[in-house]
Image (cartoon, rainbow, N blue to C red; front, side, top):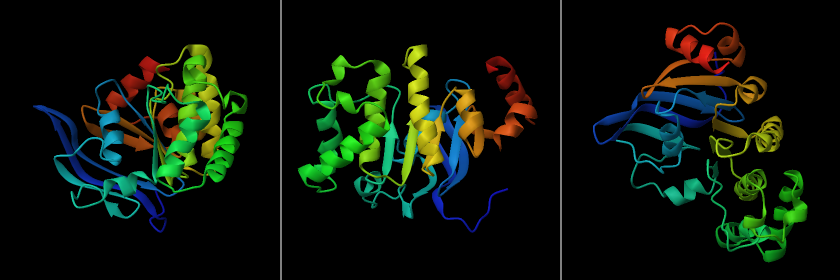
Length: 248
């Protein structure tokens, strides 16, 4: 299905993760190619977020290997902070610094990690705030913004590091319904510009419009993967069919 000549951005082989006796990831193998948009769907507790968080070692795996951008992050000797510089992550909760302005939120890591000058960091920040539609909020504090605006700040902050890979962990699940669209619009734009993305979401319209490949997980396993058309028209696995009937 995939062209193996393309560069792999993420390569997971035989990944196992336990929380106590619970097997959250059960022998998971997954390749994500440069420029690919992969959407992960499945019921709550299926291992979607654990898989995503293991990609930048927010969760330590118990077995298997994970290679990100050529670095084996499952190897304890790997400098994970170096890898994380190239991997942006947006969470369910916005995780912006409430005591810093929007502009300061976007420039802090640029200056500390990327060693950019204040003027360079601010230019990149302002360009990205314009891109996500909230340039006029640059001097505001996050507490004065709506949830949708705060999530757009979080996306812009991740993009300011100019990552090679973006991870989204249910980025709209904490938002009021009328704010979901404004965040998805930003993600659609990003996808169309060619960003490599792994997205855990329940937003099926987004999956249908943007993804190159959809992954269905249940009980820590990848049960099925295919094109969005496959999932919406003719899923193969009985569990996938049941899940799709419930959410569509």
